[in-house]
Length: 108
Image (cartoon, rainbow, N blue to C red; front, top):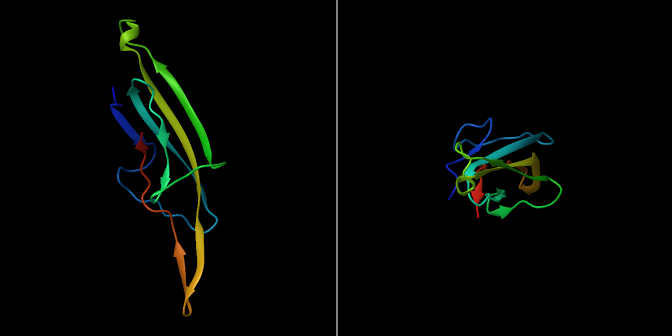
């Protein structure tokens, strides 16, 4: 069964996150009550984020109220670090700043 709730904690739904150059933030995504456990994949734009900024996943087993193992579900928690960047590509005398686009979890 797919998760019944996927959310970024402490962020308004469908909001954009803007960072200043050098500013760091850690986002946390939860996918609740899935079976099997969900795998959370983070993207910045259309590019998957990999490497040291992904702090991994934690999976918690959520037992069914009546103890039936067939009804057991899993909650996956993933944390992702982001840092504000500046794109130094110049157009004439203008400097173009680049911030992370809207952040949303995608499940595979």
